[in-house]
Image 1 (tube, rainbow, N blue to C red):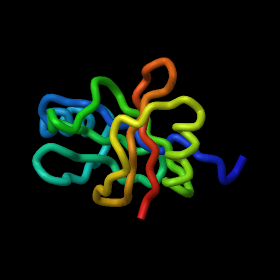
Image 2: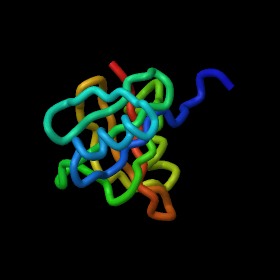
Image 3: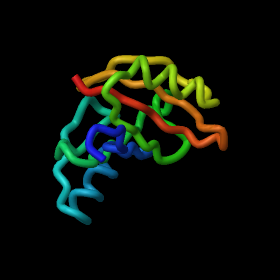
Image 4: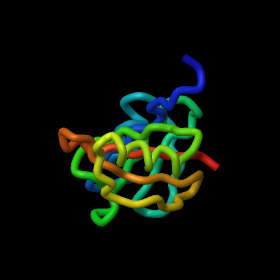
Length: 114
């Protein structure tokens, strides 16, 4: 259905963004844009892949990011449904997002692009 929130970004925790970027470029031909020394991502406009090498910022495992139309409403809905906010709304190049855990402990994020 059109207009429903959908996963549109997958972020992987990596030890070295340059090594990971080289791997995905060589293995799959993916071009990535760097955003500083610890982050790079594809910018296809479909489901994109981000590489997070900053130990203070990266998640424990792959992070599914869900695009939403209203970030504040999504945060309220996640909490009302029993989710736990692990990182309040913050800005990043390209938009704003928050992180949460579902009732089973899976970490996800919701974002609203600029």
